[in-house]
Amino acid sequence: MRWHPVLHPAGLLLALPGQAQSVLEEASRLLDRMAEANARIADLRCEFHASVLKGSRAFPPQRAILRYRARPETVHLTFLEPCRGRVVRYGRDLDGGKLRVRPEGLLHFTTLSLDPLGARAMAETLDPITVQGFPNIVAAARQLLETARRTGSPAVSLEALPGSLRLAFRSATDELTLEVDPATFLPGRVTRRRGGDSARYRYERIEVNPGLAESDFDL
Image (tube, rainbow, N blue to C red; front, side, top):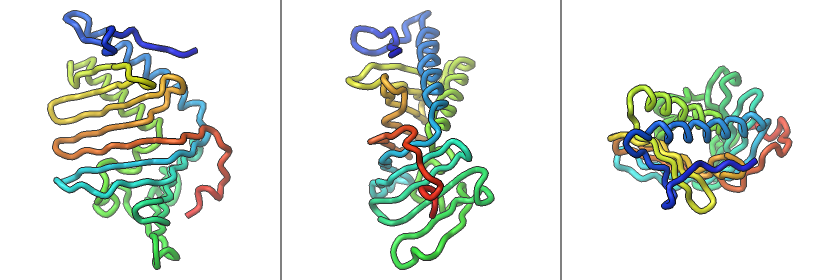
């Protein structure tokens, strides 16, 4: 059954005096539905877009085919632009927890093994590959929601947009915003901000449970 939060006529669930708890409850219900949707995913394929601003530097927009499987949890990226041909794989229980990279171009016959949280892996990204995958996005939002319940920060809002629901957590320095498809309860856009750094992610052409083969996760 499709679920819609109870919204203000302008489309925003307002935290009016004495009613902030209703925003948190609606946000919690949305995250519950997102978790239920994630639990039905054995594997997934989509087109992934990322735009990163870090250290006052805007990196070239990235586009890749993202493949995900729940068991063993694995994130696999085949880059389309830039660095066309680069392949990246990470699984907490694979490759000793290392980020495996097959470079593009003349070095495509080699493979690199990197610390997923190390400087080299994090040079052009705001979020490590360890937090990619829809279940991890929901987990991050749940942590912020629980912090908001305890401390009153970050501020939480829920807004109805054409074709999506926007759930936002904002403090003076940080932000996590999810734009969620109300039919599938999967995120189409994610925005993160930490201080002056930011990242915007888009997930397009999402295929749930396409039956990916083991070879789809090869380097």
